[in-house]
Image 1: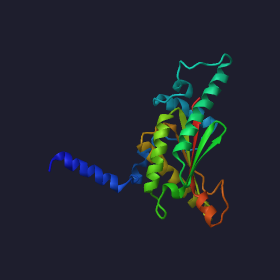
Image 2: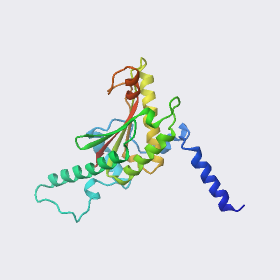
Image 3: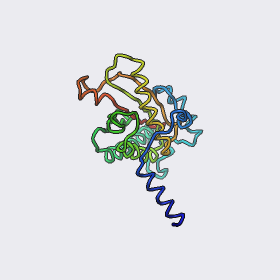
Image 4: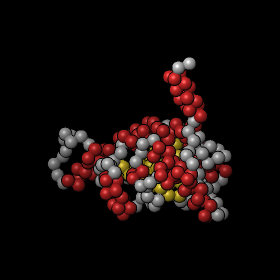
Length: 224
């Protein structure tokens, strides 16, 4: 048997094994440059020079410079560019993520992806599932294309008595998604990562509602 055959077998076995998060001790390396805070307006202002220094760009840098612009105020034109750019991103995500446990919503200029935990992680283990690998892989490809954006990855859970445990659980989910995206080419300097515990429930706290409240939200905003 030749070397190319063995290489083919290794690739095949790797594909069958599926994705597995790297050892937690290495997460700091994968998430170097990410901010572990909420994606507030002031946090974005502080992060912008870091992101631009890492090769990032603004929406106005990303558009076709030959595109016809309306006469008028520069801020009006930039606002129109941001809306157009984010509308295109929303459509791409909505078209690609029409799957159970996933939704895409608009919040002003921002776009929010809601990922119910069961759509991206194993049922009884803190690990990204086979479906999650496929779903997050799709998201990573689109985020790489629409790269003039900041990304907030926030974990949430259902009502838990221990607030500290809830925050740790949700931060683990958010970091795990952040590591995955970083491994698949999304710049860490775009990322804000946070675990919000049981705050902001989007469903009741009954059996089915709890499953919905356990989720990761990826909020995407244009870099202006």
